[in-house]
Length: 311
Image (tube, rainbow, N blue to C red):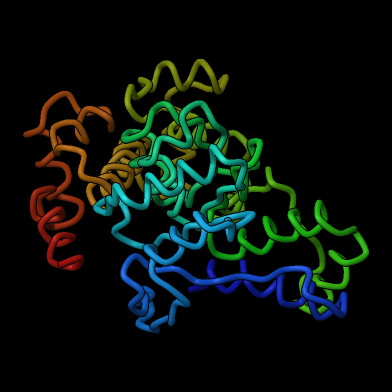
């Protein structure tokens, strides 16, 4: 709902500031029934996909279509929607995605070889499922006529970018003032807080080591390799982690890998053994043992819990 509102409201404000209908929009659901957001609020569509397709055939083709995704998108597949999106794209319409909607565009084959953005929580699973897409942890990406964003407030930035292309910078400024935001963020701005702010750490060497760990999940670095890259001794690294994080570097590295595994289990249908390999574990049994020790449940139970939630 946040991404959806952040996409529509800038257009409404632009219309109001311009004193004319610069933008018009219609809401479409597969069956024409209300779409229930993850916060429990239902959105009433203007038409079903069937009607939207018929209108496009009779000359009312949209200039742009955005897909808004939510939790559980990895289980969604619609051949009818994929065909429609592909047809619109080939006919010259712009195609975009809000939040996890990029998953739908990738499923339709529209992101092969294209730069795209998706919410950081879904990025590991998305990368595993769609290796042909060039996915980045940016706020939004524009590749030709394909627009994707990370969701949340990033939808506002992407729409401000679009308004700037369609209208002018003065209108963008007016929309920002009405929305009480001080600026349009760059497409390459971070989705997440920098490590320094996220972890409350100040030591630059420690932050560098953690960044190394986060960048090497599938093939974990040894402590000797980390020490060499950081220009520190093993003993110095051990002291840094104990003093600032209350655990050994090996333990912290393990928790980073298990956190990545948890996202893959929740956000994708990647087999558990492949999740283990993707997160640097040599065997599924060792992965399961470590996972249970940290989270109090097995990877299989985590996956089953997700299935019950989405049922």
